[in-house]
Length: 241
Image (tube, rainbow, N blue to C red):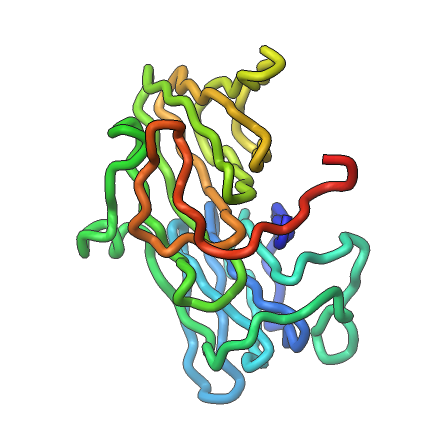
């Protein structure tokens, strides 16, 4: 799908050196407190829920858990899944690395919302903050998405792959081709792509983290089919898809 998504939970640990020489990684903190330090500049950030930080080949950094935490991490190129960190705190190569001079940065979803970065999408059914977009050069985009209880929308991402992680709330996603449906609950993901006409329904207020590849420009609106306009080459997807 062009990226991999990982769900992490950790207890307090002292500073640990990491250096993703062969990847770009974005991290979204759902719970807890962590500290990250840029080992080149010495700049440090103490992060809480709603904070997003990005690191890549240019960023030797320290990672410290101050309070038990829960966060998502997205890697591009995608990990195979069985990697372990080497002596530099890196993972082995797993594909072509998007080329950009980007350095590590931190963004806060609520601050972005207050700055006017939130928009209505899906025919007014969802409020979304597109926190990482194509201009960030990471190979994927990341959005914080909220549906109100009772919202329902038909979607069809003809030109993208999308993974959604359920942060809170319950709902249902239905495959409109086969009629199969799945209950959505916290700590679950669902994945859709170019062949997947589907319907999303929120039983309660529903809070999602959404990752797209190719990355979104950031201003797209859903068309009559529930699609977003093309924004780059579409990865081939899972074998046999």
